Figure (cartoon, rainbow over the protein chains, first blue to last red):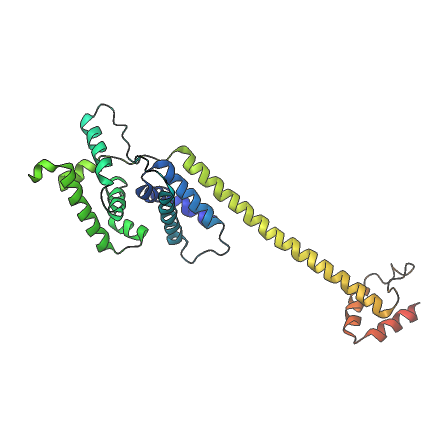
Amino acid sequence: MRELGKLFEQNQSRLYVLALSVTKRRDLAEDAVHDALIAVASLQKTPDNLKAYLFRVVRNKSLFIVHQQKKTEPSDFLNDDVAGDHESQVLIQQVKKHIGQLKPIQQEILIMKLFGNLTFAEIAELIETPLNTVSSHYRRGMEVLKMRLTPNERA
Amino acid sequence: MKELEDKLSNIQLKMPSKNYVTEASNIIFQAKQAERWSINKWFLAASLGLSLCFNVFLFLGESKLNKPLIAKSDAQKYDSGYSINYGISLTGIRTQNITKLWETEQ
C-alpha cells in the first residue's frame, strides 16, 4: 500500500491527464482516478507491475464511466479562462467542438500530446500501444483537426 | 501543421480540483489502515486458534488420565511442568509415566 501511495504521488498528474483524455470532463476524470485507486487498493495480491496496472485500471474506469453516461455532457477539459484573448477563446470553442468528431483513440492521443504535454513515448506507455502507432494516430488526427479548424485553407 | 500545433500548445488542460489529491490521499490512507487491521486480525485469529488448541489439548489429556492432573493442593508445585507432560501423554507414549509420577508425588 505504501507503494501505491508513492506511485500516486509521482504520477498524479499523468493519471489525471490520461483519465481526462478519455472522459473529457474534469469531474469524471477525477472520479475515474479515485475509482481506480479504490480498485487497486482492494486487491489481495499486488500485481507484478503495479504502475502499468494502475494506468490500465484508470483507463478502463474512464472508459466505463463514459459508457455509463446516459446523455452526452459537453466536454470540459480545456482551460477556457483566458481573459481578454478573444482569438484563443474562439480557438478553444472550435477545438472542443471538432475534437469530439475524431476517432476516440485519436482524441485521447491529441489531448495528451497537445494539452497534457506528454511525449509520444509516455503516451505509448500509458495506453500500452506501440510508439509508431501512437505517432501515426496523432498525425492523422491532426490532419483531420486542421481540416476542420481551417476549412478555408483547403479551398 | 506546425503552426496549428504551436497555437494549440498554448491551450492548457483544466487543472484538477483541490479535492483530487485530498480524496486520493484519503483512499490510500484508508487502504493502509485496512491492511494494518487485516494483519492484526490474522494475528488475533492465530492467537485465539492456538489458545483454543491448547485448551482442547489439556481437556483431552485430562479425560484420558481420568482425573485432573492439576490438583488444587498441588497446583503450585507442578505448575511449570504439566503442560509439557500433558503433550506427551496425548501422544500415548508416556501416559503411564506421567500417571505414575503423579501418583508418586501424591
